[in-house]
Image (tube, rainbow, N blue to C red):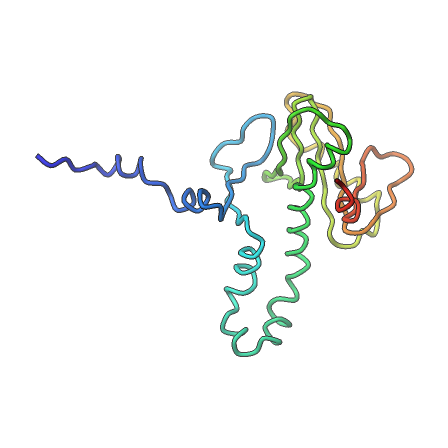
Length: 200
C-alpha cells in the first residue's frame, strides 16, 4: 500500500514563498518592537537589499518607458520619488547605527533595534535595552524648519508607545544635516548624518 501525504501534512512541511525568500536573505520579517512580542498578524516583510528595493520601486514598474526614453522616465516617474526613497534608506541607516551609538556611550546592556507602528503612530527607531531603558527615535531626511516642533512630534509619539514595564524612555532625533537642539525643555539627543558616519 502506497502512502500518500495528506494536504495538511504537505502544507505543514512546505515553507511559504515569504519564508523561502527570507531564508535566502532577500526579505526580512519585521514586527513592531516592544517589550512584549507583537502578534504574528502584525508582521511585515521588507526587502533587505538596497539594490532590489530601488529596482522594484523605480525600475521594474517603468521598464518600457526607461527603454523608450530614459530621460523622460527619470523626470516623470523617478525623480519625484527619490527623496522619499532616500528618507526610508536614512531610517534604515539610523537603526543600523544605533548599536554604534550605544558603543560610543558605553552601554553594556543587551539590546534589540527595530521600529514600531500601530494604527495611531509610526516610530522610526526603537532601541529596546535589557537595563529597563527604551530609546525612541525620529528620523528626518528633509529640511527641519523648527527643532522645537520636531521635538514636540517625538514627544507625541513617546506618549503613544506601549511602555507596559514603565521603562525609562530616551529620545533620539536623527537628521540629514546638523540641527541646533533647543537650549531648554528637551531631553532629546540630536545626531546628524555626519555624526553617524563619525562613529567608530
